[in-house]
Each structure stands twice: as C-alpha cells, then as structure tokens.
Image 1 (cartoon, rainbow, N blue to C red):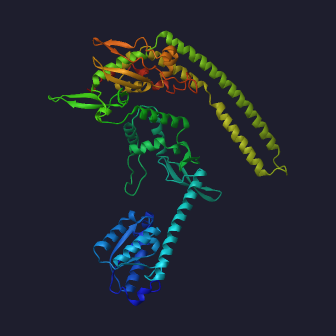
Image 2 (cartoon, rainbow, N blue to C red):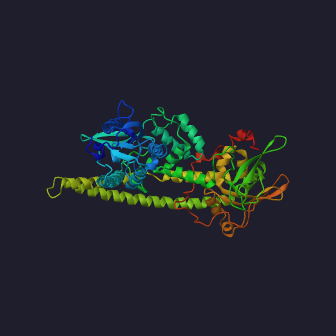
Image 3 (cartoon, rainbow, N blue to C red):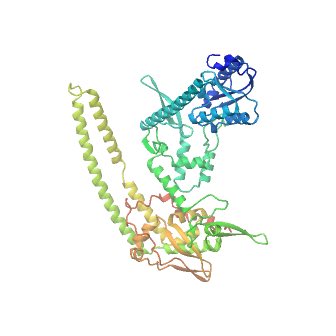
Length: 593
C-alpha cells in the first residue's frame, strides 16, 4: 500500500486523524447484496481502512454518499458535511478516498477543493491513484481530474446518442409510462426488450381519456373516478401498493402523445413501436377539452358555480371570481369579484351572484332563432352535406382505382419471384411496400363518412330545436347541465353594474353556436346589429342583453375546414336532450347564495 503515496514511507502522517469518503453514483449499487450498502461501499471502506492502518492513521469518522453524482460537489450533502467539519472543527489531517473519480468528476471543483484543503493543512489521499503531495503528484492529480471529467462527459454524450437512436427506431428511451410495462420478447433466439400494455392499468388509463373527452369531468372528479376504479401508480419500495394518481400526473397523462403511439424526445417526435392506448380522434378530443377549459379559466376552488370561468369584467377583461361575505347577523352572501379589483387595478363593484344568475338566464333569449332563421340554416346544411357526399364519392372512386393499380403491380412482382435477375430480398421488400399501401387504402375505404354526416345533421337539428327557446331550456335544466350549456354556447360574458343591477355589456359566442348564428343572421353579423330580442323585462325593469358595438360572430369563414366540423359533440352528450326528465331535479336545486 506504500507505492502510490511517497509520503507514507516517511511517516509524515503517523498518528494523524483521518476520515473516509465513500461514494457510489447509482442508487442501484447499494441494493445489490444482502448487505444494504451493496458491494462497492464495503469494498471501498476495506481498502481505505487498510491504507489508514498502513500509514498509522486513526479513522475518526466516515462519510458515505450512496447514489450521488460526482459532476457537482454542491449537490452532495455528505461531502458538504465533511468539508464543514474540516473547516470548523480542525480534527482532520487526512481525507482518504478509494479513487479520485469517486470524489471528483469536475476538474474545476477538484482544483478549488485541492487548494482549500491545502490552505487548511489537510491532505487528500487515494488508494488507487499515486497523487502524493509532491510536484509530480500534484501534476498527476490535475491530469487525472481532467481525464475523469472528460470520461464523464464522453460517457454522457454516448448515452444521449444511443437514447436518441433508440427513440428514432421507435423504442422508449425514458421511463415506461403508466399503463405500460417493460417486457422481454424472444425473436429468432434473441432476447429483445420491449414495452407492452399493462393488463391492469392500461384499460384504466384509456378510461381517463374517454371520460375526460366527454367534457363532463374536472380533474378532481376524474381523479376520484380513477381512484375508485383502482388506478394506482406502480409499486415502489416505499409504497408497495402504489399510490393514487395525482392531478398533476393526470394532466401529464392527458397531454402525453406517447399514449397515441408516438415517442417524444428532446423536442422531436418519432413513431413508436409500442401499442397505442388511445386513437388519434380520442386524443384530439381530449386536447380540445383541455384547451376549452383553459380558455374558460375554469379552476377548482372551494365554491363551484355554473358561471365560473365564463363571466368577465368589461373594464379590465379579467375573470370574475366568487367571494363570500358575512353579515353582522352571521348570514353569508356570495358576490362576483373582479380579479383586477382584488389586485387594486380595477373599480368594478361587486356583483351579487343571484342577480348575475338571473340576468344571464334572461340573456339566453338573445341567441334564440326564429323558424325562418332555422330554415335558412337547414337549407345551407343540406347544400353542404350534398357537396360533401359528392366529394366523398369522388374520393372513393379514386382510391378504388389506385388500389386496382397497386394490385396489378403486385401481381407483376409476384411473377418475378425466382427470376435470376431479381434478388429475392428486393422483391420481398417491394411486395411488402405495396401491401402496406393497399392496407392503408382499405382502411380509408372502410372508413365511411356517411355516419359522420348523419351525426352532423342530427346534432345541428337538435341544436336548432334547442335554439327555438334556449332561455326556457336553460331555466329548466340542473346546474351541472347549465355549466355545460354555458361552455357550449358562450365563450365569455362581460358584466358591468347598471342602474337596476348587473348588465351584460358584451357576449362572445362559443364555437358550437357561432356558425349557426352567422348562417342564420348574415346581415346582422356583418353590420354588428343586435338581434331583435336584445332586451328582456324581468322583475319590473328592463335589462339590456348586449351591445351593438360588436358583431355577434367573428368575421371568419362561413364554413370550417370540414363542413360543420364544429359540431363534434355527439347528440347524447347534449344536456338539453334530457332537460324534460331533469325538470324536477332542477326545481330542487338550492342556489349557491
């Protein structure tokens, strides 16, 4: 043990005091043996203790760093505690380590620590590295520290390159997502690591997407439903049975395109080899709901209300939030408070919740359509659907011709099988490519647009029936359905204080009813004129329902990219379809205030 350190032979540290610094970089290295410290740390301790005995040093303490990176010393608590002791107590003469790479992977940190220890009169000795405190030893220590840093960075770059290559091939370079499991398959005698759906959790993850896509669930409700269904995280040493999924994790899952069959990695996306848990249609619908709720400003709070996130301040454009007040008699009152006023940036007075509810209910009359306006929409719908059917038939004819051409080309390649001038591997590849193209065409031919067109027609018809008297329907349904109706029909209601109470200065229609209103009232949309029923009388005074300063619909194209593509809601999801059956339930609702 005397070879590496020339000072040892002269007895320079005889009867000195030493501490041991022991470290492994991966937590897995301390869980690989019957000994909880694993194999590496006991081996380091034995070698350092032997060097201490050889030098006549007394080991007064040891500092163990299990599973900590050496790239930066400021992220290692045991190293920090050891250095604090060296600085303050002055009872350490030597720090013993197994190798310099165990303590330093950063040449700058190594140089600074070496200079500080030298000023404190403390030596740093390594069992494996000949870095005694001589000119040549210090030179060698500096070289070793630079080499260790280079090896660390080179290994990191190599790992990053291999992980990106894995992602490009469709593999999963990061941790397996919840709903999947790591697996090993045997292919042609080779063991191949892959990712497969978790038979226990995959159906529950799919359930998260399906339920949230309905637009009827908040994150809190979705988490409760998932927990009740049995969805938990994977078991760990600390939590052998797993834990319920947090709302943060729910949000990450619903936005993760990995469940769509993609592999996101470093800002890029690759086609994955793993089985998707959701379809593209379902995933896109979930993203729409997430966007709509974020735009509406809906957040979970102590007091929920069917107008939260919808009502806004016309003066500063910020949301109105519910505030509870208490009278001297102990009675509670609820008001809508502008967030700008709460921050001292707006002067909008508080608006009573009950008064706002009544005024919004009356305002629903402004989107009612007359029978003539409804007929105008039906006429336009019929023309658009007829054009869509013609386009669909032309596309199917073109796809059928293309499939016939591919079939004939495949027959030609099949006849060349066994021909000496055509290698078998090239023919196989070309035939496989043709069959993939035919499969893609078959999928398009099987995917009929007829059902979607029928659904669009049915949805629009239900909407027109609803818009014949939306105010009556709105008053009849329960609060939970009112919230859905508000999200469907309005993007924002801007309320101010009027002479007789709250008044709606401006309203923004939602993407579902806005195209209908624009088709039904094209002149009013262009001129910005308000509808005829823009005012309603209730409780003995007239409440203005809107403003003539802005059009009822934004000046965008009359038709979406896909005709009537705004009406993706299935008829069964429209709450006013069940309004009559819920009339009794609505009457039993107790107002928030």
